[in-house]
Amino acid sequence: NLMNSLLETDLSDTNCPSYLQARALSVISTACRNRKYNPSPETAAKLYNTVIQSTAPNQSLPCRVAACTCFRELYKRMSADGNGGDVDTLSGVVRNIVDILAYTNEDAFSLSLGALIIIVKRNPALKVGDLPSRLLNIWSAHCDDPMLSDGIFDTYRALSQNGTCCEELKKVVPQLLSLYNKLNSQEILTESAVCILADIVLFTPHQDLVAECIQKGFQDTIRLCIAVEGSMRDTCLCLLRAMVQRGAQMVAQLTITLADGEQVNGPAAILRALRLSAAQCHDPMTCCSSIGPLSGLIFQLLHQLGSSVDQTIVGEMLEAMILLAHKHNKLTTVVQPIVILFANLLRSYYNTTMEILLSRIKIDNQTGFSFLLSRWLESQHSFLGKVQLRISTVGLVALLQEKNEQVAQSKVQMKNKKTKNVVETPAQLTILVVLCRLLINEWNKAERKRQQEEEDEWGSDSDEEDEEDEDEDEGQMLSDLLEGLGGCDDDEDEEELSYTPNVDQLPTDLVVYLKQQLLPFLKENQTEVASALDASQQESMAKILGMQ
Image (tube, rainbow, N blue to C red; front, top):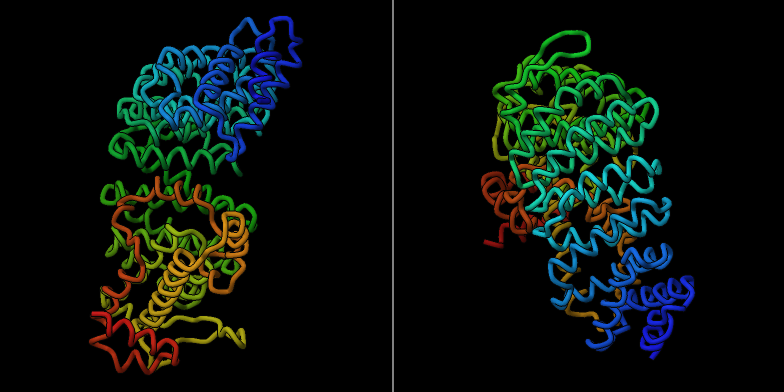
């Protein structure tokens, strides 16, 4: 009744003051966000059509902005039922929203952009015309607020996946590169331009658009990366990482001129930027923010172009990463990305990686491998992120299965959990047994988690609110510590997935995977392994051996 009243009075009366119309639209938007509100199909259609009409240029600005917010909520419902409107209707709404963006203030810009994002995301074949160029011009001219950048990134990510605007996005590339020149006056615009380019390169299905970005933007991005520091350099590293992932061979064939006049090929230019970044990771805060982009780019470069990259420089870069882990060895946020880098390299670059770790790198009178493995085993339990945990586990399995003699003879130093003293691996235990013991713990953790999930799924009779309360408390339970202190949200996993090659080859069920990988080693070394296990671990080993 309230909705019908709003439709028949505030929104249908041409003499109704605009502030009352805007308020009515705000009430409708609030109602639509409530899942318990289920209007009849007739009422929903009337509301939807009225809201679309309220975005038109002949309406007042407050009314149009409120209509955008309301449209976003209504469109979610209508599109889910297949009633979101035809292409012409949605194209008209897009034109109206862009018109609103052209002269609204920053708050209204953000509200209106939300409606645009959902249309573009849910309609990848929608013809958007010159929207990419117009949107960039509007945003760069009127908005210098970093809080608005997320909306712009979401929009261009959606546009990158649109199948109809490749040519329009090509026109945007020079515009984005021109914003590099605003580094001194509007740094937020420059950094945002780099982020948008990274999304275009990473998410577009059009390889010719990727080529356009690399050919026109690689040299400028390298120069910018070398010239800046801090978060700006991290953002440049992310763009270079995307370029290598999507167009490695193009990058390898490029010859660019650096600011000092030196001419180098693409991989050498990237390594120059990487060395500068690693050299500037002095304090923990800088290192924590830079280590992720830094290690990600190193891996992409070696994974895509390993055989064509100067192996001496590769050794220097990997040594620099080990030194960073040594310098900040108490920070899991630094150690974890470095461990994940080497775990990933062991998946696709095993022999060269092990040769560098065992022969070329020395840390505190031990090999780079011994130092890395010590930090790895010590920190594994506190790693964050489902994808990262899977990568780390697969890396440990690779070490166990290769049966490298130098690996087997290595010693690791770890802190005793009770005394906090540093202890070396006991002489009677080989490093392979230590690895096996850790992987048994991982299997046990995965098994307990799966059992808990099954109990939650079949044994809970509570309502939705109770389930939400349980979810909030779940991360505080001791059994969930392996998931990380503070957790890792789904967006972080999605980002890692987009950058991880052969991610589909990672195990999805660690219980099954670890059982399959541990069985052969346990059968061959059952007595030796059992002597190194406590009662709980021996029980887990017995379960693994019995699950054939």
